Image (cartoon, rainbow, N blue to C red):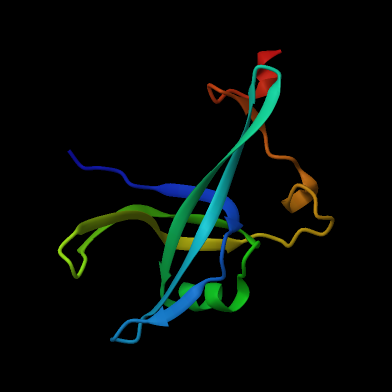
Length: 135
């Protein structure tokens, strides 16, 4: 059976993009993205943050290196990939990252508020349902 691998994330950069080039000259940018989720647990409002490594190739990589910086918001669409390698002392390592197909730059925050459009992200309960739907 064929698989399906699609990831869509919206968050803020945790570091400036690092732009480099492969030996054949292909641009490659990598950066971290913090994706937060708010939810209600009982009467308390909680927040959980997931940190994801992103890698992007080609012209899009150059644009990311030129226009994005730490703290900027971005929407990343791509696929999940696992990289495996062996260290110099023979230890096996692996890492999951998102290989971006598109990176959409979010507008800069004007008021230091909730983000694009000033809208707060939805609050979910511990099962993932909108808190407003529970009432």
